[in-house]
Length: 289
Length: 275
Image (cartoon, rainbow over all chains, first blue to last red; front, side, top):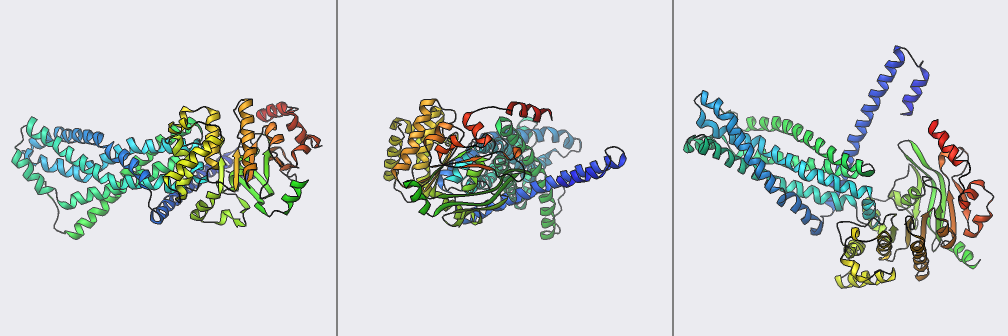
């Protein structure tokens, strides 16, 4: 920052050169600030990993987080999963019927759910319901000096607060994903077969043809990355919360926004990487729906 | 005189060498050198924003200095690993300005927290000690099942004090222990600090801007001054001596603080805002 001030002083205060230097300085500051934030986040994650493998957290810190992430999130994940399955049926049916392929609807709906929508939906719900709440809770603890109090009493805040939240998100997001997949399948089946009248036998036969164990594995593997990213981003935002009610609110919002962006970015890159793995393992494995 | 002789023979428990702390390029502490002998009660005095809380948090590693060293019992605390520092902190007690009780826990769980961290106590020992410490700070056992939000500010401060004392720490740090309390409760807290010191060998550092605490409680007073109003060559410590010498100080800044006079400060603040 001081460097850019120095640069300002060396140039006249008006004219295109001065404005150009201002522009360069602003971009430089933006890049440096973002690099610093990325570095800070990387150090935070590293410290959490060191504590994770140094000492496991106590059950009294793990169980409340397991409950918040797993049990309390199940109803909302189940409900949204059901609706997404039905929406896929509504949107897909008329397109497929025009081609006379409505019995293939089961394959499309279930493959989409297992590979993409189930994991992304469960992760989005987790980021909105649990991630924001984590950021707000830890942010309040930061503002009211409770995190300092933990450290002052010999409890490392990363070990005490971050590791249990990380483990609960990591271990329970696959369960939420399975719930989202299952309820989505049930929703899609109900609307396709019971409401739109698609033949039940062919609906499930096509599903079994197109959805493989590898698809299920891809969905669950992606969910692990989503869970890890959500917990780390939310805890980081809470730990670095600025003072006051506004700071806590901003941390909660930022945790959801960054988590959502991370979920979509990870989804893209993991999708590309896992497809490459699939076609390496099964060179003849291209599907035709 | 006798206290002074004893203290001068004690080896320093805390030693601060050439300490600099800056946040986002803004220096808060500059060239601080301070030695606190074991058993001493020290008040860090100064107006709001002069860096006294930052100095105290740096003493136990809650804030990392930009430059300089802090030694506790000959250990450079900022050179320790996180695990070593967590272990060392069991020898400290910290009373936070707003008590910093964990609001998800009951008072009993809050007070038992340091003992559970230590991991060497049975539930019966924990219960016994928690109740004993609560009585010492004048609170009934009925508060144990309550949450911090259900207590008054004075009660929360006393719970915070009881929690800080529960492990018999060698060094107790009090961050503005009487701020926001009525005069009677202020004196109660002052009495509790004095009683804690008399009960056993403990070193205390008290951050405050309350003159009644500065006159009544400590063996020694150190006054800090905000860097923004100092010349580059001036020391940030503007007073270091006995509490009774505060009134005799010839330093204009010390006199102004001790007497609680605004002087030219209001005009300075308006000037800074306009500038």
